[in-house]
Length: 276
Length: 276
Image 1 (cartoon, each protein chain N blue to C red):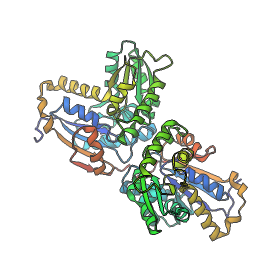
Image 2 (cartoon, rainbow over the protein chains, first blue to last red):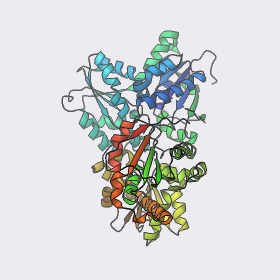
Image 3 (cartoon, chains in turn green, red):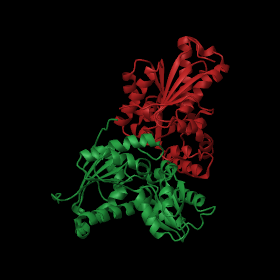
Image 4 (cartoon, rainbow over the protein chains, first blue to last red):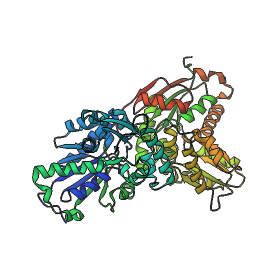
């Protein structure tokens, strides 16, 4: 199905393929939109880098998507959102939505004990973006950096004893010292939804898992629904959704690795060389 | 000790801090030189990226070192050497030495069974730089990509059961199907020397470990010794060796992470913003 004239074009940005879990959720909830996805695969990962570096890269990507007619931007990268959401908003003239606030909103709605654990990259955790946003809502958060989870997922070791052992170590270090009663495990990295079954087995049984990818798609759907009465759009249009992908490293590798994250084959990937 | 007027200035380049294992070996073998080290930490890792991307980054770094008066360059990064050594040589006018050839030379001298295993990043393995260079010397090589080892080392899990388990899996997949008789384990990534004790325990007992960082420093020492009669230079000068570091991401993080690799405190790190 070709894009209809009145369909909105949503730009989705991530450092790599992780943001495809957000796009996957968006395709289910906002199937009538056109999507242009930008993966900054030549410079990934952002999660171990500084605020200056991440801001510089994120602004370049956001402007690229705006030049490609995105009418709104979803920053589908926890690190870029945590470190650079404000500078991205200043750098473009279209509305920008990040992944932190929607996950925080959902967590605030669900947590009874007002104590939660957030998993993220080193950079996301160091920024304390989650802790600050949750504190405003009266929730205490322990933020736990999990630098091995992304490489394990990219190695394809999703249902693997090593991933289970590593998850057990990380969660053991998080749900302790006063956080035994934390009742939400917030996945603050778009890669982590792929490990959800493992994390479900390893997390304490009373804990609910909140996935920021899913929460963000719900926030976008709500925003568009409120603004344009789109909530009644036909769901079956998903299949015909118009998708275009840009990657700064190899298009072939993006296609190969991305398929697992999007849950469907990826075509239409173009390599772009973004000058700093 | 200030650099003497006749001391040579050696530029050492890596995508991050891994190349500091090469610098460490150089400081022991060529202590009288001045060193300028460039870590492209804003764009690391190179190991998962394409030849075009790695070449572009490596050339920028090599030219930067040349502009900072390096009289020879050591490409202390297996991925950059494997993918881009020739284009780097063309881009600068000083002599360039990579890490692949020295490790291969040493392996060729040591292997009795003419069958070896090489561990490296995904990109190094895909390039088959080691297999080709060893084949010329009549040695068969199995190249094994080990994408989890770098993140495990950077997490600081060096003497850790997970690193041992992951190493056991990788080596188990390598020393099989005709490679049970391989008698050399060539470490084709500058991070891996930190895991040498674990790899020693996990590798078959008859296997000798060859470390490309160590071999490269020996090759540099030999080259300078042959050219300038430097082999008799006083070893105790190491402490006063003149060191300067550049990093494209946070200088503070480079200092913190790098110390483990260099085996001594790191001062004098300057952040640089390298435009593409």
